[in-house]
Image (cartoon, rainbow, N blue to C red; front, top):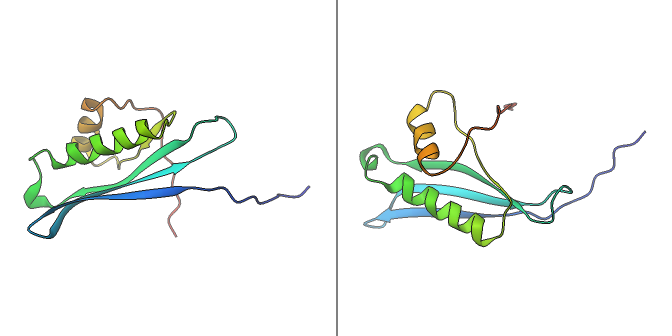
Length: 109
């Protein structure tokens, strides 16, 4: 039995919020396809706001923009991951309409 490799197209967008030409927040969204759906899916990654700017709604703004980009791309789902140690982030994601759907498994290299 052989495993065949096939390349698939994916692309990403980096969003950033700046103040006085200094980046204070960022997020990435990646768009990918699989064989299960005709529509793409999106993965949101590395949502970050500098500590001194937290609590001002910037993270919510970034996530809302990612949600809009996924909707505009006609994605069938948007995946957001977060560490167990970030309950405030989990609350934010729930407030913005995400639901928890299982576990994330990871292998660091």
